[in-house]
Image (cartoon, rainbow, N blue to C red):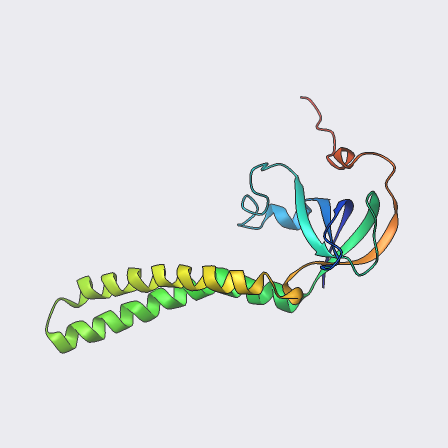
Length: 162
C-alpha cells in the first residue's frame, strides 16, 4: 500500500462519498517521471486529489490517504509499458507485411510501429476514462489524524532564501 498524508479542503458530493485533499509531494515523487503531470497547472510541491472518504473526514482534517499497490502497478503498466509493446508489435507486423508484399521492410516496419504507438495512446485514453470511475483506482482516506486549524495554504513548506 502506498500512503500519503494531507489536509481535506473540500467535501465532494454526498452520493459519491468523496473529499478533495491537498498533499505535499513526497520524496518518492522526486524520482517519478510523471511528477510534472500529477497536478495540472501549479507545478509546485502541493497536489490536489479527490479521494474516497471512508473515514468520514471533514474540511480541515489531517488525514492519511491510501492507494492500492496493485492498482498503481496496473496503471503504471498501462501508461509506460503498453505503448512500447504496441510499438514493437506494430514494427514486427509491419516487417511481416512488407516481406509478404515484397516491399521495403524498414519503411513499413517504422510506419506500422508508429501507427500502433499512436493507437496505444487512444486505447490508454479510453481505458483511463473507464478506470477513473472505478473506485479501486482512486485513493482512499483511511485515517483522520486530527484537525488542522490553519488554512490549507500552510501545507506548503516555506522556502529558504539563499
